[in-house]
Image 1 (spheres, rainbow, N blue to C red):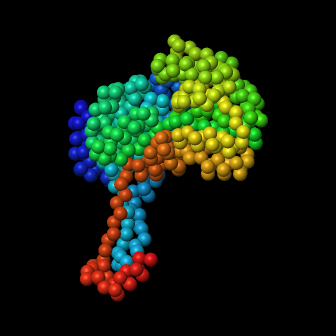
Image 2 (image 1 turned 120 degrees about the vertical axis):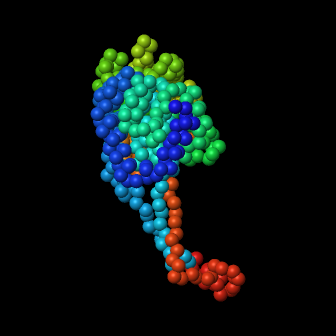
Image 3 (image 1 turned 135 degrees about the vertical axis):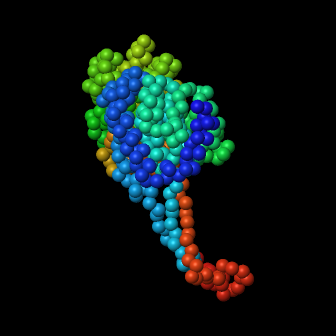
Length: 456
């Protein structure tokens, strides 16, 4: 079915108002949950085929998080759908004010290849909970996962409700030519701009989950051993192909060398002395990205790692020292297992470095100095982050996840996913038994005096 026909069919189905009922939404969420749980092994096998992602990591970072998001929606759906009362100004006496959530309509969810299960289904859960129809476009760079997602969703839903469109650039372009009621895109900044440009013609509200160079600041008060452990976990998860991975480290000079050694030791502890032999270590998505990443190795001194295996598209966890801020590795989001470590002076110097660059999707701070923590959290603008850990801030349905500036527009997870696919209608219900006349012409000094008093 062509995109035009899919969107037309979904508009017709949405107009029946079936998706607006709580019973429909709850049934759809339960159906999706059952299918994801039943196909866990199949999904994890597809993630391994596409990214050499282990079953443990596939569940921890993708399948398990999707199930948790569905559970949140099932638990909170009645509350999220309920109209909310609002205060009514005295000037509108006698009246009741309330806000009614309504689904935006037919939504497009475009997902990337790095977490293809999570980033396809998590937004979809929000769309279903909000009462929308949706078209899901998985990434062509994760073909095995795309195929399983298509089979899974088609086993659950009719295409006039939830449809899956596979393919590459041509299919993306065809979908972006359609008029949707909302677009949710996760991917690169460059493509995000194109999505926003296409959506602006209607105009269609967009949620853009992008990326950028997410910094990690480590000061001399930090627990360095624990910082190294958690830094290595967050950086090399999915072979560094994570939008919120620590992109570079700014470490206070007094502990720079110690941190480098602890990170080197921690890489060996977590991945083994020969990481490329580790059966649970991921691979780079394709040859183009592999070559790009190998080219970035020249940006500094290799402290550990640096090896690549072209036949399996794997790159060992790598740490670079003696990196210049002007070097190639510092000019673009790395999106791979290469970690530049730059020395700095005070946390304030690190803040100036971060603030001189585009706002990142995430920021990580390792410190035991609460005053320094307050300064950095207040003084730097970023999407979200952690103090004394990395990446885990996105693994909760009780906080919004999203970017700011060039790292994204809008947010999702939990209630925020529901909000992303919902329009909130503001309504005033006016009583008929009284009609204050001060707003009507002819205007008089007496009515103006009353008006000024009411509107204070």
